[in-house]
Image (tube, rainbow, N blue to C red; front, side):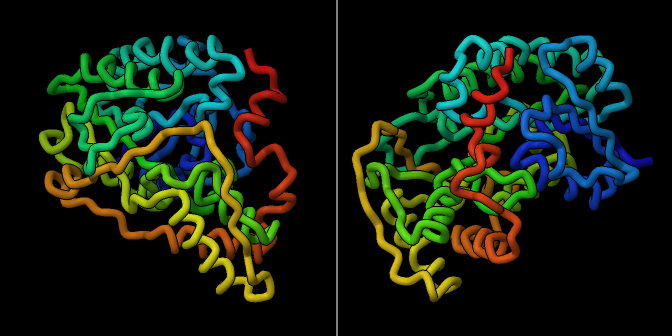
Length: 334
């Protein structure tokens, strides 16, 4: 019998890549999502997929969605700093206040495994040559802070019958049917392709990245692992660490190869107030699980270029649906 997985936030950027991978692996999938960005990125009509429009703060509805669910992958949040700052109380209520009640509801419903997508941005600014999972959490914004504060509330429920694991992903990049163009690599590529000019804010900040296919495949992998390998563990999940200026140079080179007619693409550097900088180590997940990413930043940029060529990202410089903070602002969520 196929196991049932609930993906909280499953209609989002990562969810729309993850859900087809889960279905292909034979899982029955329940997507529980506020649908702030719609559900067009999901393979609706698939016999193994159930889509529920629901708020994580609606405890009875969430509890009802957990019937028969074996595992939960928790991606849902008001994501990124600007979206959080629009309405800090609203964001705190979704990202933090309802987190422990949701975890408890999973325990009560007999869920056996809970995978939590935290963030590597919980490390804030660090000069450490390698930021490991033991590094102190020094968040520079409320979004990062509440991601970090939620982690111990999950680990509190770790037990032989409830396996918990925390993933701290690097900045995700690459194409998704529910596209975000407010993430470093995706922004740089969009501007290179459609403006012929890349603007770099700051440039010296180190930013770890991970391809969207890799992070989605990791979540599928974690469902299959023996409990003793992952129970109560926290893992960084990143791949390549570069400064923002180095990323811009890579993007320029690849876009000029993919769109020779757009060369030369210029790079302009301006000051930034976003100081987050850290060099994330993903050695623990390699050593403990033998897991390593397979896709590079170059793969992500080339995938985005293909999507632009295929007309999959219309009005990418102007349409608010690609920018989380603009969409959240328009919806005036409460």
